[in-house]
Structures are given as structure tokens and as C-alpha cells.
Amino acid sequence: MKYQSIDNRLFIENRAKFVAQMKPNSIAIFRSNYEFVRNGDATMEFKQHSDLFWLTGIDQEDSILVLFPDSPEEAFRECLFLKQTNAVIAVWDGHKYTKEEATATSGIKSIFWNDTFQTAIRSKINYAENIYLTLNENDRYSYKAPYSDLDFARDIQRDFPLHTYYRAAPILQRLRSVKSEIELSLTKHAISISKKGFERILKFVKPGVMEYEVEAELIHEYIRNAGTGHSFHPIVASGESACVLHYIDNNKPCKDGDLLLVDCGVDYANYASDMTRVLPVNGKFTDRQKQVYNAVLRVMREATKLLVPGTLLMDYHKVVGKELMEKELVDLGLLSMDDIKNEDPAWPAYKKYFMHGTSHFLGIDVHDVGMRYEPMQAGNLFTCEPGIYIQEEGIGIRLENNILITNNGPVDFMDAINMPLEIDEIESMMAK
Image (cartoon, rainbow, N blue to C red; front, top):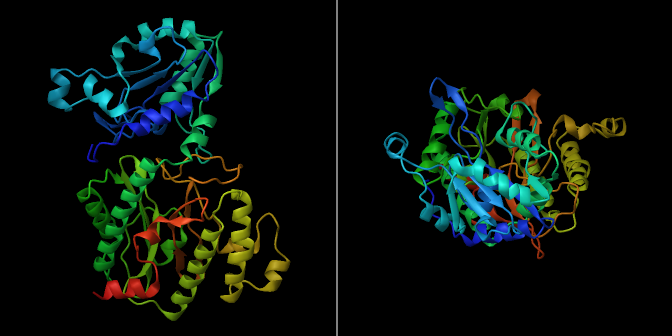
């Protein structure tokens, strides 16, 4: 790993929070993600299972966590099963955790090699009445292929059909959505790297550069500052491409007079930042570009004020769209009062120019888990990212900061480190 070691108090406390929610005489089992084949003998870059990382800090494939607080054997009340290294693995793949290193990372004393898992786990499950398993229950996930959790759930239910099974995901979603101080410090560090990346491209962008060159400048800054890499595939969209919400081709030239929308984030120690900025390719916004930019900025500022404990996410999205954005679109001459009067309530008029939500949970995953139908609470971390997309004018503007909800009002982590956002800041830095 490129990142510095994380205080294992984070993982010790996280496990204690989860165990406190388990029913008596229950066992919970968490497995790492698969290493997926790319082609031939190559594999995709490994990304640890978010729940397993949150509970252990173990950042290695073929890892299994077992939590059985009522186990009659103390060694199995919490234990890890890990890949045992050997001379061949050491030569070809490099270092793997020793038992001592795994304990130092996770705070778990009982470490076993995973080739003993099948034999060891059977007797432990036989003592338990209930089994907690996790599946990918992220609201944004669309099932397309088998994955480790799903395969394991099928196997264990086949082998132990008489146990009672419970979903770990609802517990973990509530717990993971409230960030600890250690987690917030990791996110802040990721955001600080994002700032360096943005300042780098402000000095680099000019007419004629390719979108992929801008992407390369970002990843250069991320890696040189010990980031693992992009927290998601970056969007580097110039001109009309900025009106394609998930544009990731990043293969067009940046033209004089166009805007460049950059939606990007840093993965640092498995924690994500998520930022969107828009800059003029030639260093100067036109009057019309300024009008639209400032409209989006006003909506972002007002929407941020609504991110307070007790707010319901669905209600918040409606207020941002129907009250804040609708007014700006009318003032920009994009909507008329007749458009609003005659709109389809299921797809309000403002959706023509602002068709996505304003905020999503942020954390280990860039679209992190959280309870979207429960009131926001202190410790939740959200993005705030309104946008206006005018295809007929070739203008797409989205602005995005990362906001912590507290009992004393929202805290904007990007404002706190003076991430450039205002038009004069951007033009001034590009002029240098």
C-alpha cells in the first residue's frame, strides 16, 4: 500500500459497533472481493471489499473475517483467515501480511491461514444459531455478474440450511454512514490531494490539449502524493461532452472558447474524495458562461445550507430542484412560467437542464452506503453537486464539494482548504 498505516483503533471500534448490533449466539462472516480476470493471465487491480476494510483495515485479497462474540472458544470470537505466503508468492507477487502485521493493522489477535478456513469454520457455525452475511445492497448497484459475497451466501446456505440468516448490510450502512474522526482525517487528506490535482490542471489547460492529457496530469499528482489512484473513472469533458453526465471517453481536444468539466476524485487509504470543477479552456469565461456558472454556484451554496440533521434526502432533492434550481433556470431564460405551469409532475420542467440528484453519501466508496430514507444525522458526509446542462449552447456546468453534517451546521471540507471555486480565482490561477 502507498498510504501510511491507519490507527487500528478505527477498526477495533468499528467491530465493537457492529458486534453490539448482532443478535445473541450469532456468527458473522465477511470475505474479501475476488481478484477478477482481465485477459490471459492478467487480473484487474484489486480493490478490497468496503465492509471488510471498514472492519479490519486488511487490504489484501483472499481474506476472511469471522466475528462470533459468544463463541465458547476465545480465539474465534474475532479472527482473520489470510493468505499464507511462501517463497514462490514472495518472488512473483511480493510481500503478504505476516500474522504479526495483520494483528498490528487490525487489532485482531487470532490470525489463521485461509487454507484452514473450511475445516475450522464448520464447528464454529455448529455452535451458532444465526449467521450474518453481507451482500452488495448499495442503492446504486445493478446486479450484472457473480461476486464473492453472493457466491459465498449461496454456498453456506446450501451447507448449513437449518440456521437463521440475517443481513449485515442494514447494520453496516447505518454504521458506515456516520464517520469517525479517523475516517474524516483520511477523507480530508484525499481532498487535499484533489486540490493539488486541480491546481495542477489549472496551470496546464489551454486550447489544443487533449482531454486524456488532463486526465494524465491528475493521476500524476494523485500518485506522487501517495494516493492509490482515481476513486472512480474521471470525467474530463470539454464543450458539449460536458452535457453527457457519465462521459468517460476523455478523447477529444479542448477547444478555444469551450468549457472543460472535470469530475474526479482521489482514493487514499480506501477513502474517496469527489470533486467537480469547470474551467474555461482559454482561461476566460464568456459572459454567458459566467451567468450559468454563477447560477450553479448559487444553487450549490444554498443547497449546502440544507444539509443539516433531520433533513430527508428525498425532500432535499425536491427543494433544490423545484425552489433553488427552477428560479435560476427562469432567470437564465431557459424556462418560462408556462413551462412550469404545464410540467409533468413526474418529470418537472427543471429536469430538462438538471436531471440528476444533488447529493450522495461519500466515504470508503465514492457512492457510499447510507440510509437514504432516514433523516440525515451528524457525521454523515455528502457531496453537493448541482449542475446545468444546455446542449443547444454546448454548455455543461456542475460544481461539487464535500460536506460534513454536524450539529452546528454543515462544514465544507473543500472550502476549508481554499479549493479554488469562484470565477475570479480560476481565471487568476489560469493566467499564471
